[in-house]
Length: 396
Image (cartoon, rainbow, N blue to C red; front, side):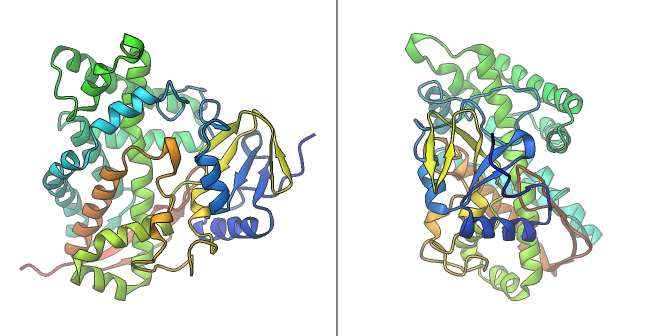
């Protein structure tokens, strides 16, 4: 018999209320159980999350990698694969995300950010998460994957529709929108088979070059990995940007400081990533019975690594609910996970967030929340809708 539930992750979508609930669990019930989504465990302490994420032999990704999981039960590499099957996919993607290559993308990303911000600036406001926050990341993905320019608007609309359907477990819409992204991935693979590009510059070409055991990657898994790439960078950015704008709206002094000193943006981005980590549902299952803080976890039971809760653990971060620039323990934040399944796109994500935030601040002299916000449901946490009122910056 399963133990009685310790919390209900569906009790509130309000980020502050959800974080407060995780804070109570972190203090009094660090290995907590919920009956939602068929039942799962939640680890909320930084040390426990790090230990689990760093032990892929015990905490497996191949059974359940997220709660709630894809309603169709599909498994796509690399996040749903364990080593050694995971390794060639991760190696191929890492090859295209080296610092030199990512840096070369910055000028184009700035062009895209300015263009996508222009309508909101001209209108004096808009939903920064659902508008700019949903459109700009599609251009980031398109540049990384070397997709045609007309693919980015299609991806933005499709991925947004897919994410909404996935959150409400609407299988029909998930199927239809995922199929559209699979079509983009298949077309990309076919093009690169005919016209390969340098493996350090192009993810599809890099995946096609892999030969584990002397054989090419399974064609369907290769397409699935690219399909994963199409959506993985579309989920977090709207939430992050929306949540950051809520903090900036509450702190005009911080707004002014970052506008006056753009050199502070890299450090600010790291603290924003810690403070507004948008994930609470990334999961593992155990390979054998595990005893932790007096609770027994058995194989088959999903275990969520609540990165958002771990990043506000006062055992690691003083004043964990406050924005503190240049905090001494900032390198301990888990916004990108930890261990073998740490986010491959970290360098690109950091650049994209720095560009998006920098252009938003440079294009405005003030911004403020202008209406009710909407919180994210499991598996994310944060603000998915943030109406802003903006004052455009004076022309130079």
